[in-house]
Amino acid sequence: MSRRFDCSDPAQRAEGLEEAAAALRRQELVVLPTDTVYGIGADAFTHAAVAKLLEAKGRGRDMPSPVLVGTVRAAQALVEDLGTYGQDLIDTFWPGALTLVVRANRALMWDLGETKGTVALRMPLHPVALDLLKEIGPMAVSSANRSGSPPAATAAEAEEQLGDAVSVYLDGGKSNDLTPSTIVDLTTPVPRLLRAGAIPVEKIRRVVGFVATSDE
Figure 1 (cartoon, rainbow, N blue to C red):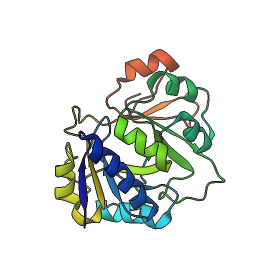
Figure 2: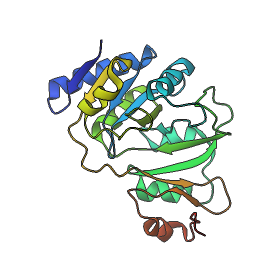
Figure 3: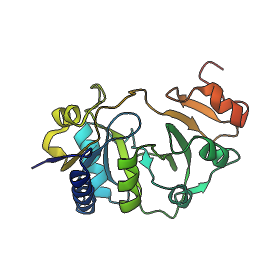
Figure 4: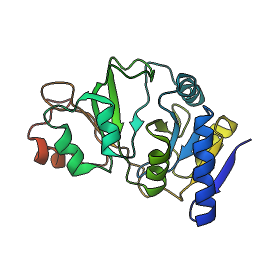
């Protein structure tokens, strides 16, 4: 049975965060608000939970989930190397709508899908998400919708699509911007734009210089 918590109410927010953390530790799924669309999340280090996430979305292992973190230090522990530009991009745009694809720490015992040794990392600019991430640690998080369906702008829309596959819905109100995060690949010598999103590529170029795009 799913439960939804109104995070605009301080008491429900506190209870919801506690219940969400407990659900994640039980290898269950949680829906949470972010600064873009709502996300469906699982403990990134629990193989069974990540498999449940992919199943709930109707997505295969060939489309691994990004990982959200609550602190820069948590992100640094997950990577082999941020490369030449990673730290500058983090300093400029995190927390915010920039996802960085980097080489994952090879010592990590996790299975996010067919990542080819990489991980897509982001620190969201949303207080509810950050509170949960700081409590539970890194989470595998994907947009809270069935694969091929529109992204959820509200917890209710997420619940319509995902139902009882999710144990806890944290309702942070309607998302103000459904534009997804910008994704930049830092695993190549030159940063490459993988997805245009909320942060314009021109702003990223101000930090790193050249960014390759699909038409270049």
